[in-house]
Amino acid sequence: MEGGAVDGMLEFMIEATHITKSFAGRRVVDDVTFRAEPGSVTGFLGPNGAGKTTTLRILVGLTEPDDGRATVLGGPYAALERPGRRVGTLLDASAQHVGRRGREALALSALLLEVPGRRVDELLEYVGLDGGAGHKRVGQYSLGMRQRLGLAHALLGDPEVLILDEPANGLDPEGMRWMREVLRDFADRGGTVLLSSHLLAEVEAIADRMVIIGGGRVQAQGTHAELLPEDLTLARAVDGEGLAAALAGAGLVARPAPDGGLFVDADPDRIGLAALTGGVALSHLSAADSAGLERLFFDLTSTPAKAEPITHEPLIGASA
Amino acid sequence: MSTQNLTLLTKPRPVSGGPSLLTLIRVELRKMLDTRAGLWTALGVVGLSAVVVAVRAFSAQPEDQTLEAMMGYAIEPAGLLLPVVGVLLVASEWSQRTALNTFTLVPQRGYVLGAKLGAAVVLAAAMLVASFVISGAGTLLASPGVDGTWSMPLGQVGQYGVYLVISMLIGVAFGAATLISAPAIVLYFALPLGITAATSLSFLEGAGEWIDTQRTLAELPEGLVSADGWARVGTTVALWVALPLAIGAYRILRREIRS
Image 1 (tube, rainbow over the protein chains, first blue to last red):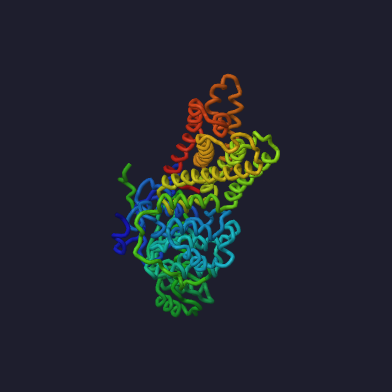
Image 2 (cartoon, rainbow over the protein chains, first blue to last red):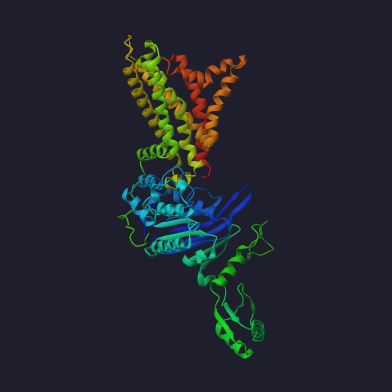
């Protein structure tokens, strides 16, 4: 028995434990461990080629891991009875027959899931593909329309869990905002969302927790607050050099921010005081927030795929 | 577009058990016919069959206008083109990348393959019925008035069915072994030609009697087949259906689903 009996008692709806996968000798996913909780959106963030898609494919049983264990709703995905009624997936919005009409693609899955046909129309309307769009062939769809169709497909079985690979690709800004609302709503109703993206801003805007992956390994994970390594403040002044000098004088560490100004490893109080002491007028002072996260993201993932990530294993005495 | 009004299905879930094999077969049948390629191939088979029969009805000698003679012609387009539908039934899942959805909704891959085989047989049976309707209409139209216009041994009816099912399954097996539509279709048409050419060499002549589909299967719609003939059909099926299907099943069941 899986599923129903333990329904609602699971702490983690998605659990990846030490997943490892190599293709042709190249380790694409390397000891990946993370979890996704109900009522939350987990963002799986990493540059292209970091191993996100392979990990998601392993979660839904399309790819067999070399090592490690992937469970969804407490067991292997493939062991779920009628998985589409419990887990909605969107792995590739373009993976639809180009000669099939959008509505028909949904109707086929509705037959498999044994959900009423009216749900197809309801979902087409929900994702904004009602009217003529559903009767067009998928080949005529833009990528954004395919993403909408894919999301409708994922939601068709009214699942508890959503696993989405780059769902915002191809969406216009309005579409992205809409997607965020849909996923937020889904999580707020108690659902579990795992979505991947290579765009930090996108994940940051929606995810409650982030799992940052680079070179096949999890580089960091946690909530937004947990991920920011320290108090980081963005400070700007008209007299930039004066500010730098004033900060140095107060013994604070600062480095240039991408859009001008300085990142300072200190809270705003101390910076304000340092500026006052140095006689520099501040024009901007705020928690670095997303800028800090962006720096973290690039620091963690911009190493070449082959380079060793930072580890804390002893250099001597490691197993041969 | 709104985020407010999506109704939730009645809990509790899940419904016990996955979809029944019958449901899967229904879905596979619908998938064969709900795309442009699939629909037009099927309509093409029926249309071509009607044209062939119509030509015979107006031009052939009366003795070539019996139901059995008409049926021999009516069934040819299906014998030729059904395998293409069979190839697409499996290979288009990869060429059109729908395998991703198919196997996430039904992770039991063998079950899906079984449903495809079932759907292939159902479609072959439907084509048999359509061929009978068309050739019957042609016979009626021609009304040749010769002895045995409407008579046909029951065994022959069965042979038509076997012929169409084997043709269809060859297509499915080729689609499964290659998992890519266009090369599978080319291979399906080119390989028999190659075999026919090769077995025209004197020292391969004997093999041709057993493995050349153009010879072994061609017997089926043309009169009752002898025991020897069935042995040759069996050999052909082993080589053209069982072997590629085994390769295909291995690829589909064991390999990761890439699309």
